[in-house]
Amino acid sequence: MEKRAEHGDFLRIHDETVKNVMEAVPADQTLYELAELFKVFGDFTRIKIMSLLLEAELCVGDMAQLMGMSQNAVSHQLRVLKNSELVKFRREGKVIFYSLADSHVKRIISQGLEHVNE
View 1 (spheres, helix red, strand yellow):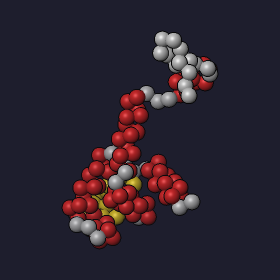
View 2 (view 1 turned 60 degrees about the vertical axis):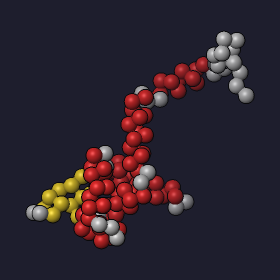
View 3 (view 1 turned 180 degrees about the horizontal axis):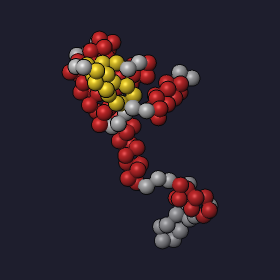
View 4 (view 1 turned 135 degrees about the vertical axis):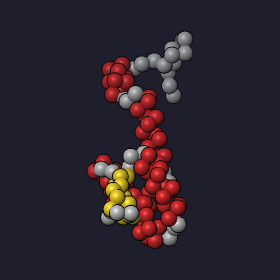
C-alpha cells in the first residue's frame, strides 16, 4: 500500500533512487517512438518476413513463395518495415532484394527468438 502525504503527493522514501531513475529514463518522445517500433514488431507477418531475412537476402517473389502469400501482401508489409527503417533494399536490374537494415535489427530478432525458445 502506498503512503500519501496530507496533500495527496506520494511520500518519497528513496529520494536518491527516484532522482536517479528520473534522470535515466528516456524522454517521452523517445519512449513513444520505441513503442511505435515495437508495434511494427507486433505483427506475425512482419516478424515472419524479418525471420526470413535473418537467413538470407530475398526478393519479394521468393518471400511470397516461402510465406504462401501474394506478392502484393508481402510488398505491403515490406513498405511498413522500410518506413520503420527495419529493412533495406538494393536493386539488381529489375529485381529488388531486401535484407535486414542493420546489426541492431538482427540482434533484436535473434534475441527475441532466443527468449521464446528458452
